[in-house]
Picture: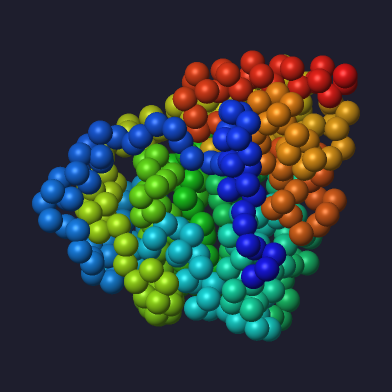
Length: 381
């Protein structure tokens, strides 16, 4: 684990704090979720729900997740096959460690969320990357097929995709499904941004495709959907035997967590549909606000169909090393961002791309845009 002793998010957030920079690096909102959700947690705390919850999660949350999957995605899920986890991060770790080991390979999209590489290393498995390249970040059959082998055990699929903002199309998902069946691989779908999809794009759960429910595990969380990332309430569902394997690992990671938050999340999952679409619409507006500012600052903005993040190319500013620029920007113009290259194995994958988080208050985004306007002139100075 020596390569994973710290994260770029922690380092960049610390640098932003030291320099007083606007932090568009780490992907957490700076506003709270629905008032009913927050009051539900207070009621649970004051109501005495402060001890260990059941190992698989409180019954009302497991039922609420199953009902949510039926309501939004037409997935037939039994509450008995839902496992509540400490965020989706723990769900992913439990699955990878349960289903893979030395000699196994895990297929991931590149760029990939940094915890993926760490948990694959913990399991002793090897990652095989499938490149998604700017400006559209589309999945090709040639690249995907090249990542599969006789040792492929698991496909770790993130859509909507962090850090690129890509939402995989039905055709792309059908390609993943076909290769997973050919190689008898399990697919773990990280769908934490399932409700944060913008106009013109559609989230299609891989588990909804013909023949895929029996080999697909799905994870999501309350953190991204309801802007309560600090609560760390996630869940996992899928075939009984695969969930049981993950539960066997999970019980020796955190055992249980978030006792009073679980019933609050259960109630929130039943909120009216306009609450969910409202989150998405507000984020889409914020995406446009920041994207316009990035273009005005001279960067080339890539397509973003969902998530909290937009990527931008620094090449028009004459910059060929976005990683070096990311470490300079907090002092140079007072804005922090994440270099996309840190999410890649290929050293030439994304050398000029920066990832910016737009899940912030409007005044924060306006301040960032104003500061970024000085980036080009200061680089040229």
